[in-house]
Length: 294
Image (cartoon, rainbow, N blue to C red; front, top):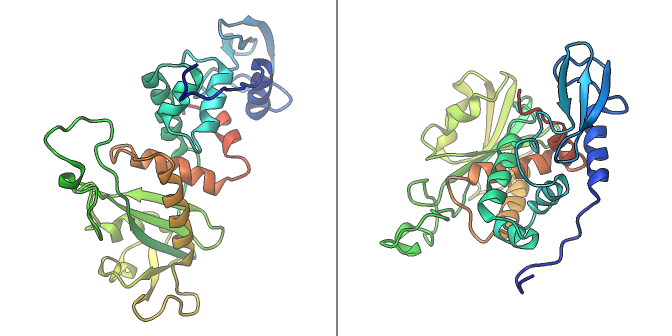
């Protein structure tokens, strides 16, 4: 083990399979193809997953079929560890700690991030908030010998755009339950339309006084608009963006842990963060239950 690696204590493999089965099936295993409970055990796979035969549709499946773990060569306990460590550790560090190939770990991390944005549907209704934040994110992982970080715009202050390595992120929050969705944008030219697509027609949208939100109430999906000019005040009754500011605080602190994120993968990172914020008590179980086959 090199000096940069940490000793990893992995959970027992059978305990990982037990947790996966309980999350997916509950107390009774059902067929992933036809949902019948007429299944019998038929040995195990090379990864120690229990294999089953469905008497109803006459097909085989196993514990890992149609899960995010099914198409990777890692042991299940390693994949559990990667998902857990994704919350706070850079991928390179996770790979070093496990003694695994960086690209293989990165591919799995990206798959988990990809499905994070698909697990729960998101829409806006009643009183909601929208605000924007600009995230420093460049071409991490891509060699660019002709451009220094300063030339690429990584140290520019103020508002930016995707091309200038400071992509804007729209933050949408439902005031009713605090659920959040982050949208990485090329620019904010069509921000009003991007927000309105999530509205159900009852939305009273609270924003700051930035002109991109002007007349958003005229779009289908948004019923009213309350804007607060922050140079004057931050709260006027129910009109404020304090919940968005709270989510921005989480966003900044979380991204700082990774010491730089590629702008091309920024949406994936923020989808995973949104899953954690929206489901703090059961985000891991939701990943276990997710059916990659749709």
